[in-house]
Image (cartoon, rainbow, N blue to C red; front, side):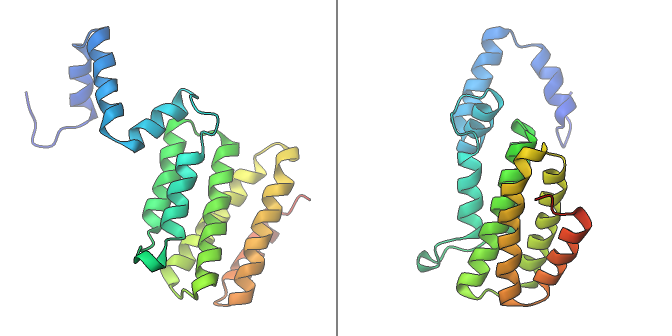
Length: 179
């Protein structure tokens, strides 16, 4: 029976009817359908030496666009790259790297072009906090370099104003700098 709005349950019922060849064909078709699917499968099966590369490229594109080509920013698309990585493999050290990169690119771009967007700044502070949470759960040896990169983001934001650096100071104090 078909419903007006198909759900995962409907798909799962159909998957049960597929044999091995049918399932492999379906995955092949999904792979061919788009780069996001390819990145997901490469990450899930650890097929690339740099699993973070496509996710980093997406973050970079949407948080530091080429203004000379009239490219816009999209916090949502940059955050989606992190969510996609989390679904594909979700290793904490990879998540921390992507979150710190998000902060670096957002802070750098806004400072570079003088962007003044409260929503953009709010997203930066929220990701800064998410990054701190993930970093504090990492083994001690992996933390210092990530802390230092976030501290540089905080320093950049202090130079620009809008209270973002102050918010970051509070978050760093709350989560404690381990180095």
